[in-house]
Image 1 (spheres, one colour):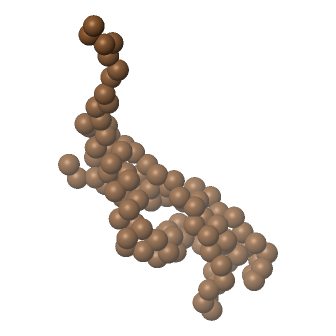
Image 2 (cartoon, one colour; image 1 turned 180 degrees about the horizontal axis):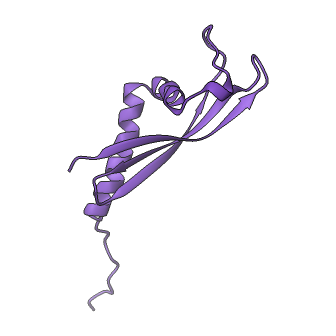
Length: 106
């Protein structure tokens, strides 16, 4: 079962400094599907002023902002979120079995 992952930006919050509309918070979603089952996890990434480059808010692209999020998460963070989605899908395919309380036989 191969899972296909899709990252999307759900929203962003800005501050007026150090530049107008400086992005300080990004709300994102990672969705995975195996073609039959779909699961997702939401995330929230915080940013502060770093580096010497600034892209005006109106010129930002989803790909650029996703790059910021994924750079901040790093390979381990991305793998952890993908594992979370994988686990949700696996639970849909093979629902966990829970013990049931039975009356005593006597």
